[in-house]
Image (cartoon, rainbow, N blue to C red):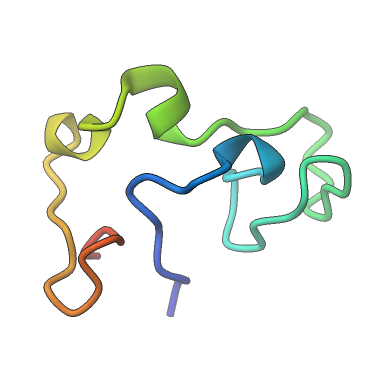
Length: 66
């Protein structure tokens, strides 16, 4: 099962959001050869999940329902 994905993390710039590892920005473990993947809130704003057709998880309102 994939890890819960936060809607609006406090410091999204500190992590890479490209896979389920959620590595620190300077310690990328996936080895995909690229830089840090931005969280959607950094590029699309706080309501990014609405454009993607996602909903907050009723059990964890600060995370996306998968």
